[in-house]
Length: 352
Image (cartoon, rainbow, N blue to C red; front, side, top):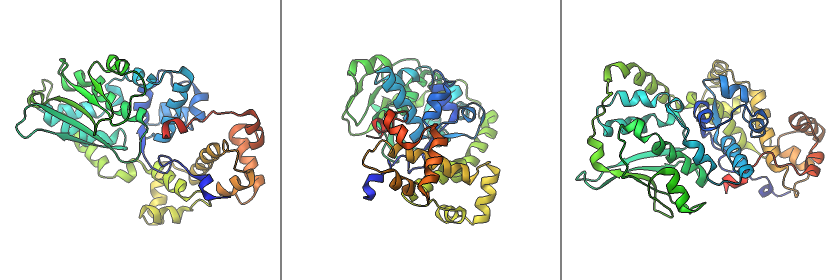
């Protein structure tokens, strides 16, 4: 069977992830274990594991399923209106270390990878500091339009709190086409919104950059900023589990790499990787099982793929072992799954 049949979305092959605290804040109900597990998200870790960074492909699969169930293409943006600073535990401290909005935005851009690592942010300031400044977002890998909208929504929804400026006079621009009437976007964001633009950006008066932040307390927040920068200096350790997962996805279809193979891919000695995995409580067998499950649930909906080929593509040496694993994952055999035409894991709408 042609390898093209086993294509995985780029986002699955990427380590991009979002913190559990952000996802908890975004979702109205994080106790729906069935929906969470269908997307591959561990409900217990989502609530209790401070290190848990949810792979973006899983977060978007969950949001896509919710959008499909509700019939509302802007559901995620409506949920974003409930975001609070609890979703961004270190960003508020970054502002405390700043005396002006410009200082604060630069620190927020620096700290953004602590929340997620899928985009690059840039503050564009006009040379004469007049007219509009722009907070421009560039995805590091292809992101679905709904995800890009959601990324900028946080800056808009929390703007008055983060920036300590209550007045409007800002606008949003997106490179993609509108997924709903523009008036619906503008009602949610409370500002003009344009589409088919050159960049994804939040525009605001450049004069705001000189706004003094009343709560500035650089001394108090210095220790917090030092810890944040220590974490940022070790991006691999900040998101180790998803870097390992990405290397495994990149190996499919075929056998998954062992620990020495993973160490080589990440540029680490095997002994050091084993130590890091122990410190982060990562079990290679569990991670590989999760990777195989996600790939199988994506490929199972392709009727052109026969079960024996899928077993080999997932790295199983025998079809019987794949059959047992699939039943353990879903409670059904692959054939029963196809007969029921279940679509629990909805990925394609967000990866299009």
